Amino acid sequence: MKIRQVERNEIDKVLNLIDEYDRPRSSWPSDDRVDEIYTAILQCGGCVIGVFTLDKMIGTCTVNCCANLSWSGRPFAIIENVIVSKSYRNKGVGKSLLEYAVSHSKKIGCYKVALMTGSKDPATHRFYDAAGFYPTKQGYQIRFFDQ
Image 1: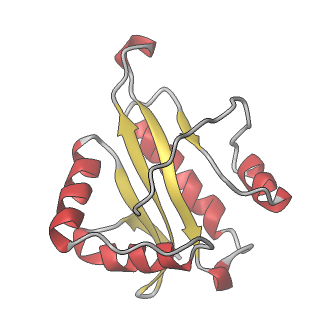
Image 2 (image 1 turned 30 degrees about the vertical axis):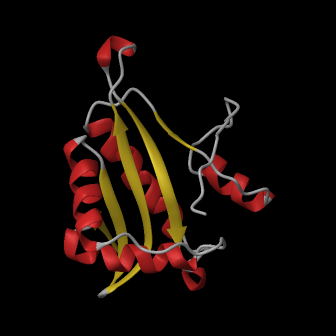
Image 3 (image 1 turned 60 degrees about the vertical axis):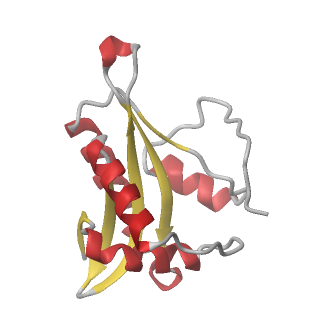
């Protein structure tokens, strides 16, 4: 198992994993839009991370780095789209993926890293707890869906 930042030409593998997630599928962004998104993630200090076995991507997440005025101007990171292929779950892949994401966030000077989950499954909550994340704040959101 190898964990590293995903190259632009591997984004289709990330999108395939996202399609495995248990939610209604949405259309993929156009190639031009993928270029814009990938560039924006990198320019802010973030990254797209992949977990690989041989040439197969089995896990992914995205680290978005956000500029910030508090904490002496140190940024914070948000981890999104944590996905491990179903046949590789409960094997340490997700924990290793999050360790890499946290390490990257520390390396770029973030004062914190956060994530949210919509899962009500206690096993998912235990997973995030075991990875060192704590449910210390209440999350709120407004979603905008395509019609």
